[in-house]
Length: 139
Image (tube, rainbow, N blue to C red):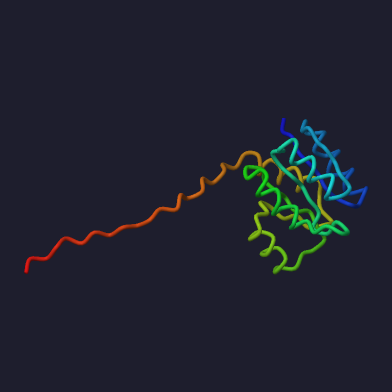
């Protein structure tokens, strides 16, 4: 169905997300570190990236920022144990499409991937210069 990249430094979570997505017919590449995951994103431009917030030496939000630059049409789903409202808001402002907290149900992953793949992409507004012309007034 769709090419996905999963990045998580916990092997059990990485295997669970990958297995669930493969069972739905998606082509999944799984990485246990951000560096290898970013290299794959640069090469394959996946439709969806599922990424952990804390990846040891790499911050998942830094990966999201790079994904937004490398492949703006790729949607990022953050899968993390961080459930503080401020973390969720911060992630969404940085470009995260969806946010799933651990522990999670497998269906939550499938729903997030499905939504990321089927929801229309917003067309960015073109910045335009507004010029207002006033008619000359009679003297």
